[in-house]
Length: 89
Image (tube, rainbow, N blue to C red; front, side, top):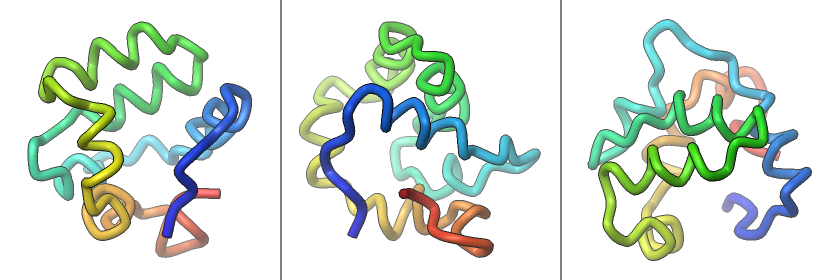
C-alpha cells in the first residue's frame, strides 16, 4: 500500500524519482487517462498549481479519486520503476 500523506518536500522528492519513460506505463494504467507524466514533472518542479490544473482536466473530484483509486494496481502498478525498486517511497 502506498503512503497517503506526504509533506510538500516529500512529494517533490518522490516526483523527482520519475524515470520519464518514453512509453509511460503509469498513463496507460490510469482508467481516466490522466497525464501522469506531466503531473509528476510539475510536482518535481514544485509547481503545485500547474499539477492541480493537469489533474483537474480529467477529474472533477481529484481528491476523492486519489483516495479511492486502486493506484497500486493501475498507475503505480504499471510504473517501470516498480520493476527495479518500489514505484513509490
